[in-house]
Image 1: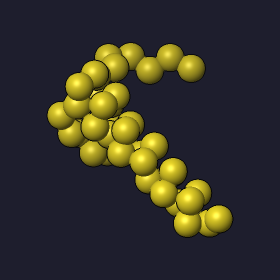
Image 2 (image 1 turned 45 degrees about the horizontal axis):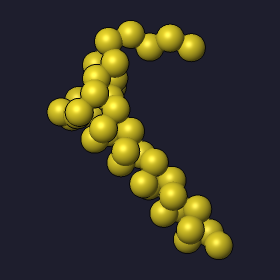
Image 3 (image 1 turned 120 degrees about the horizontal axis):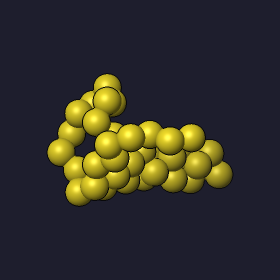
Length: 40
């Protein structure tokens, strides 16, 4: 069960890095969508 949680977490992180990214992140990778402003 722990392997599934690690896999889902890794998939979520890869989605965040490659599809939706923010300009001021530690890993500035080219992505499909880039947020200009982070609102919480």
